[in-house]
Structures are given as C-alpha cells and as structure tokens.
Length: 238
Ligand code: FPP
Image (cartoon, rainbow, N blue to C red; front, side, top):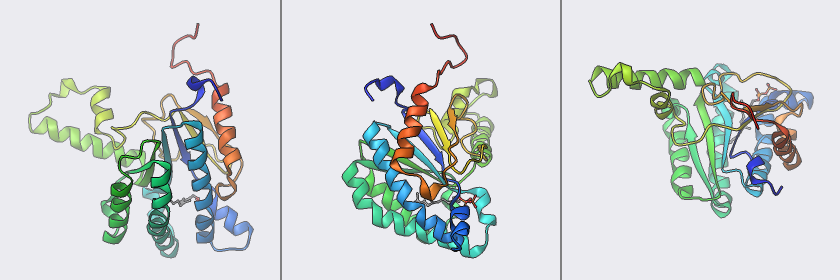
C-alpha cells in the first residue's frame, strides 16, 4: 500500500470468540485462548509489515474476573508463558511491549512476568504492542478522575483548568495516540468497555471470524477496509 496516509497509526483489537471456537470443537474454553496466541503473532507480523505503529489488544477485562476460576487461572498462565516465549521474537521484530489497565490486582508472579517483558523489549522502534490487562474504560476513567480530584484537593490544579487534555493525560493511554481503527472479531458489534474515551473518532470494523481463526490476511483486510473509510473528524473534507 503506497499511500501512507491511509495506514492507521494505531489499531486496537477486541479478540473475541475464543470460547465459541473451542466449544464448537468440543474443547475446553481455555483451549480457545491457547489457539488465540497464533493470531496475536500473525497480527503483529502484519502490523509491522504495514507500518502500523501501535497495536492494542484487549486481553483481559475487569469483568473477566467473573469467569470460572479455572479459566481465569489458565489465562494468567497463558499470559506468563506467552510473554516469556515470545519476548525474543518481539525484540527481533523491534516490538516494545506496554500495558494499560490496573495490574495491581494480578498476582506477584504475573506482575513480574509482565514487567520483565516491558523491560526487555523497551526501546523497540518498529511497533508498540499495548496489552490491555485488567482493563475497562470505566475503571480507567474512574482512576483518572480520582487522580485529577487529588490534584484539585492538594491545590496543584484549579477545577476550572480541567480540560480534555487534562483527562487524556490522566488516562492509562496518555503516552499513545487514539486508535484510528478498532476491530472486534466474532461478529459482535459492541465496544464492551474498551477505549470508550479514545474511540471518539475511531473507525470500527466487525468481521465475523472468530479470533483463533483470524489470519494475517484478515489483518490485511482490516487495513484495506480502513483505507476505504472517509474520516472527517466532524468537519467537511474538501
Ligand atoms: C475473548 O473471547 C477473549 C479473551 C477473554 C482472552 C483473550 C486472550 C488471548 C487471546 C491471549 C492473548 C495473550 C497475550 C499475551 C496477548 P471469549 O472467551 O469471550 O469468547 P466467546 O465470546 O466466544 O466466549
């Protein structure tokens, strides 16, 4: 694709359909999550190839704690294993791993694995992979409001000075641009508490494919779909 303006700088994905993929094959739900690792690799490869600079993956929501303990435990184990196994390849590809969400609720072990992946990949220049872990927008916004209220209470910020920028800078995503394209697999057409503030002008795309079946070609389709959209940001295009 030669027209660089048409490449989204930031793609965010709600990786949905792992459970259905497993159930349709008579497998346990956690096997769907394991099968969901290959499309993470494919998406990363495709994103780097297209010159996408930020890829955010919704890997665990604050609501996901409500799933059966065995599934939650399997997901935690999968996060630990994948960051260890994938880190050498991420470094090779120039991928820097970062996280959004409240990681304080994770066990010490999970927190250590995540922190190590961040440290070891720091400085990767090709792409920033942002894992949304124990993340939800409402939780993120609530934490941001508490932080801002703290500044008002201690006198370092006047309430009248609070602007959109103050809020952006208090969100977990402060260091990243807003997503240009949000993809949700499995045909569900909802944002489910994902990047609600940041999605204000994002293009949305909802392919039917279940996440474990999502291939590099599907990522290419997402980029093609985005290239066709006419983004106006509330103004008129000449
Ligand atoms: C949603 O499918 C998927 C999840 C809750 C987990 C996604 C996590 C991975 C694919 C692992 C990624 C790991 C790293 C380190 C990035 P679902 O279970 O809600 O599917 P369903 O709607 O069909 O039940």
